[in-house]
Image 1 (spheres, rainbow, N blue to C red):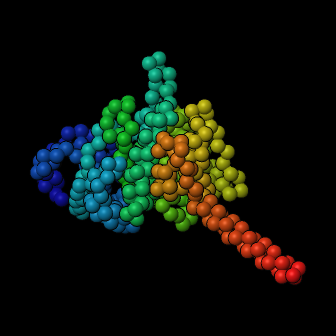
Image 2 (cartoon, rainbow, N blue to C red):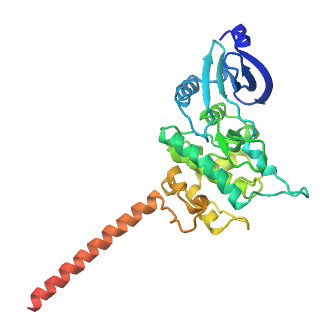
Amino acid sequence: MPLEDFVEVYSVRDLLGVGAFGVVLQVKNKVTNERSALKIIPKEKLSKHALSILKNESTIMAQMRHPSVVAFKRIFENAKFIILEMELIRGGQLKQVFKRVDSDGKPQAMTDLEASKIIKSLLEGVAYIHERSIIHRDIKPENILLTEASQSCTEVKIIDFGLSAEFNLRLGKDATEKAGTLIYMAPEQVALENYSKKVDIWPVGIIMYQLLTNGKHPCFNKGESSNEYIQKMRNIDSKPLKWEFNENFSELAKDFFLKLCSYPPNQRYDANRALMHPWLTRNERDEIPLTRKQEILNFARGIDLRKAMRVAYFTSQMKLQFSN
């Protein structure tokens, strides 16, 4: 789209943000009369691989409609820029709730119920994109928007699919620039191992923890370098993380968190199992879903038990035959 065509189509109303990729503007589309968020990305900042991912996922995103996923409208391209037109979300980034204060100006963490509602809204969006074989790869508070500019808002929308994480890793940025993405990555993603959709579940757990602790990260220490954090994640097998929970964590909340932030990934929930957990359903009579590994272990134990029962049965039958 030539610059003159851009001016013909859009009138710029506000600057919403500046990031690693480029700028995000609030615009009014003169053709549709809609207000939108317009992301303008210089092509020079994208590798060929990143550009390919962006185009492919934009095509898929254009077909998605879910309350927890930002609506993608259009993609434009010229020699220098990729331009994405998306739904305008007015509530701001989720990370702003980490700084919430009470009437006396003291830090005020979210209640168990409020945090549960936000995480449920987030996981519903994650489940939706996973069902369509998309992995976000960069779930973090900056990529989650509140639907309304209200302190009581508990509905969110996911934005920025997949490219920020890849972009930061490709550039090899320093600790302060890279940490925003790095500290929400699952261990297998940090270790550059093959990964599955479950890399999107780990950061949901991290965000849940932060909602209940005024933004405290459960495994990133203030002043820690990116290299130190990477080594900690890569050594998680030999040196498991030690989780600490404050009084805001109920027993159900602890159980749910541990099933989101388990390692290796086969001990971690997928999005659909997570949505069945009673911490989200708010029905304590609901059974706590097993992880996939727990199901396999139970199945194996069941086979062993059935084998033992068969052996015991045939042994008893043999004894009866010999005694007659």
